[in-house]
Length: 514
Image 1 (cartoon, rainbow, N blue to C red):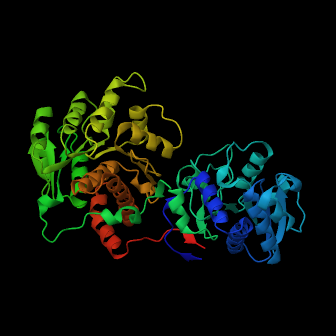
Image 2 (tube, rainbow, N blue to C red):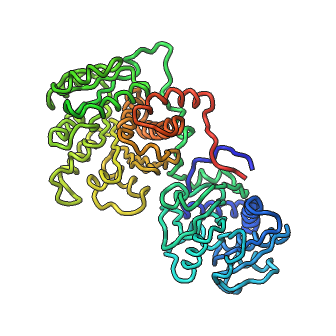
Image 3 (cartoon, rainbow, N blue to C red):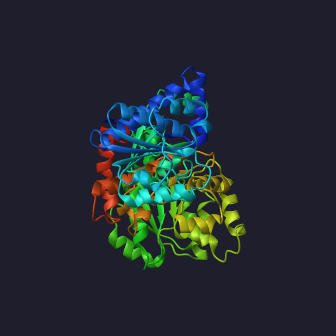
């Protein structure tokens, strides 16, 4: 298996079922797809244990179980010692799974804890990505025992117990050492907590043509440069600093200025031609003492910010980092939304709209959304973490992906729902899940730099959703490049190195493709 870039389209279990259906309708036999899937899993299994090792294979009632029977047959042919159990009697299996089960000539053992007692590998072929109910009873107990045993688990499609659409855990879930999935990854492979259960992810080509995606029209992608690189701003030969945009970053009061400076540095490194830190009177001196290439402009209150933004060359405005959770911050955000400049609302600028909030339909928040929608051509990006998201959007339910999509539609803005599995969603339903953020990004000021990256990109005219996706990916890659000991100040300084690498090799290595 060679390391190559993984396809970025993510298919829900329903969309994957449609891909199977279309492939079969196009002339590929379902049994062929199942044989190919089983062979990919058998190859992965053979890499994980010595020759002739003892392998336990747990088969479920559907096609995932059918894959398991193929794995058993192929591994037995290679000399491995196989113990197989199926959750339902053979006569209750249907379709292709039934055919593959009858091609297995070995015994079918009852489900018991003894199955994992002396094996060297467990192949989980029970439920896959399409699980629709919680795992309970004896199966849950078996999963729990396997997880604590230390025996490596190879999952077929998705570790049993992980919801393929949401990444949620349905009762109990295997913690796999490796997962083999087919054709395209599922959202649950990238969303937490399911992502932690998958281990190394192997994407297998089982014969489904990529052209079928045109009929499926997936709306979710893994965030990667191929998603946005074509519209990343490139310097023009006849360009100058004003053609690269002028970003305004609103500073907090004199004792809370660091966050705005971090964001401003991020915007400048992201390519904005000019960046100005708009400073309240008591913050001018401290900001001016710290900044060189970034300008400082005094302002006072909403009228002062309006005066700054009345110059149309100032085409992007970031409010929130260090601004303070106060009515004054809310008023500044409302003023910014009266102009045509792109607006990024981060941190305190989001929470400020939830002051004295009584319920999920707070009129102040709804007024913010109405204000955003008044200018649909103007880019607005909201960058909440989970706590801010709950305060602003209330009790939206569903997976992180579903909640981000609903929030984008409700607000009319691009929503970056931050975390180790950041989701970037647009009002039109497009969404991307980020997967390159290391734990070192959990450091003070990191989010301020991200907001600055977004602001710098939209200032250059990059479309807002693509700019948000690019900023999130670049933010993660800067942290990966820097490595241990990262602090927020390091992120903007790492960006030129990431961009240089990206220019030299547009697509970074991803998953194993068999």
